[in-house]
Length: 345
Length: 112
Image 1 (cartoon, rainbow over the protein chains, first blue to last red):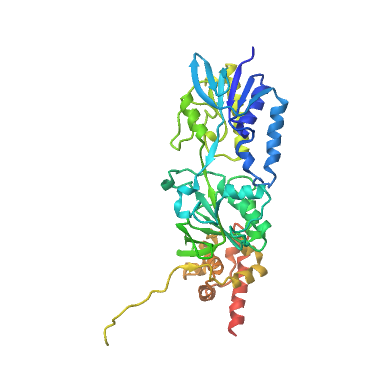
Image 2: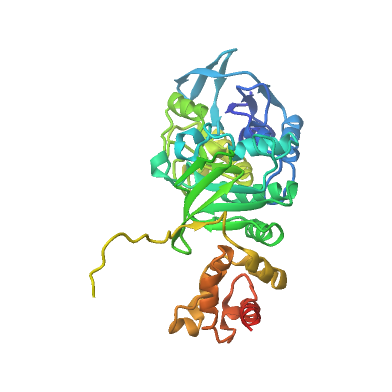
């Protein structure tokens, strides 16, 4: 009888790790609390840096699942876990499953921008998050002010809820910088008369083609980058948003009004990630994400034998790195269940 | 001499981008679009011969143009000797010398 692996979360990480585990010959249950697969990928319109549609990647992941023998359980949430010897007895709202190994792929949630009250999200009409903007793109909606007037000037704020001890998050969320550049280009494409200003502390263009995208934003879309972290935003009488920032490169305070302010919200661990960490006894890192057993050599593994991690439940990752991590974790699970010598290092 | 009394109002140091005049920046960009690619790294200013002895900095000029601080640009531009060392070090391949040349030309033409 083939060994059973339960994968928790059918976002990109859970989908891809399930595909490979099934092809390694394991019996895979993929558990998802929502009524559809895809996770956060369902919120994206186009992806950086190539600007291809997010749905194309979702289709690729879905095909992988379809070609493999995977038991997909939608609308299923884990309620309790018991461990007897090397087996996990997992109680869900629908059934009980006995598993030889578990992969946690419960991902992230975006930072709640209302916590940065000084930026006015949820208070001012023309302050939105990068996720809200992505949804507008997905729905093919016009990018206009809340009162329907066209946007002439747009501000994009980097590092909202990231690299900010006041927000409780000291870490970099990695994907926001390039998302800001991507969205600046998309806003300008939709509104060629608009001017876009990005407010940043550092621009972390670490991936292949990211720097080129940044250059394209400057060259073809005239996007301006002002180095300085927003201290506050205020609403003016006409509904536009006045932002205050130090222009650190000229060493002077600067203010300007924008028709739309976009907050690039960072990653925090999802509720499911925190819950699964507690249920399975997996240790958390200082940033409240789940922790690999070793930063360099123990990726995929946790402090609990038989419990593995894939994707953004352990750290902010790009989609590319999430898929990579998911495949790599499938290999670690195979090593564990087949008792490979390599896993005894 | 009588001692000074009363209040003095300091001019605001704040840059107000709503009132800034970026027409010169736009003019120079139309002549030399590579100016748009500046990332304000400062390598131009570090290598600048004039910058060793004066307050001249191409990076500052690049910022001042964008912020509409034309007076500052006008004051600074006379210090440049157009040697072109700044082009050699620019990682974004901005044609800095061409920008500086046209700035000089702009102020010369507007003065004469």
